[in-house]
Image 1 (cartoon, rainbow, N blue to C red):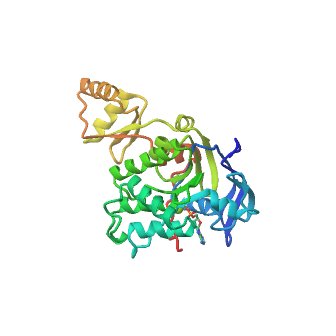
Image 2 (cartoon, rainbow, N blue to C red):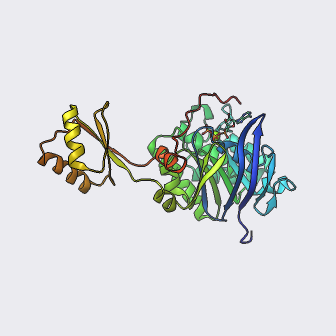
Image 3 (tube, helix red, strand yellow):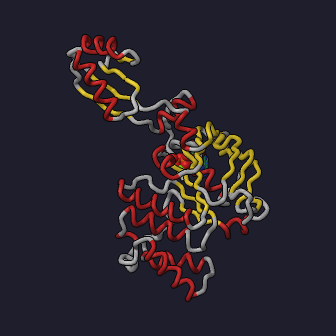
Length: 318
Ligand SMILES: Nc1ncnc2c1ncn2[C@@H]1O[C@H](COP(=O)(O)OP(=O)(O)OP(=O)(O)O)[C@@H](O)[C@H]1O
Ligand SMILES: [Mg+2]
């Protein structure tokens, strides 16, 4: 591939009936980087992945993937990409090995090459011991690894990962993050969707924030976080008097009289925590409870859109 962007999208639109799901999206993903599409439930992440990976059609927009026009050369696009969907493609009745061999057959790798590729992927994703067991017996983390391995059978240049770590425990998440980093080190371009700011921050070279079908921000993690107010401390007091004295003592703080809590901007560092508690101690103000709050998706959304992540009441049926 040349220096052309791995993925270039302009004016992408998609509606289901009168529900506008993607409302004119533009994005560019540089070859060999990790791009993260960050958004809450129902933002349109899966829809975007499905369109970019040729699974469903768009209503409008120009899309080039791996140098090919999506509408005119879908087969060339398919040959260049691997997709790991939000909902697993693993066949539960088959073993891990059989699932991979099935993918190798779909890619016409030939028997010998298919076996070689399968063995390599099982080893690489730490699934060799479980290779002969049915996928039903796999843990969530193992299943995700198998699912991803299946997406890599064709040696794709671009890999789409739709919420690869949702539902995984912290250790399995870190394993998945390392796998993603290794892929990029090997020259692969990653398009990753996530609901987690920390995941996008950890992995992505660039992040685009999707809100109700529109991109509300795009940039490096640093640029994005600069637009989001830092973390804060939440202090809870036993009574209104405590809250009042603390409000006077601390200045820059927002109080909630009903909950008897005070929100104080803070970087969450031990030093600032100690300084704050010392000041309260000097005034003999007692704190019932203290929680440290680091910026999360809600903070990003509030900062960028002026509203919290939409709590969608509707249920997605597929
Ligand atoms: N096949 C479909 N028919 C009708 N509406 C759909 C269809 N697929 C998705 N939608 C709607 O499009 C919107 C975006 O859905 P999408 O699955 O792309 O969101 P998402 O960002 O992936 O959310 P999540 O984090 O829950 O996976 C939702 O309101 C959803 O109900
Ligand atoms: Mg989704």
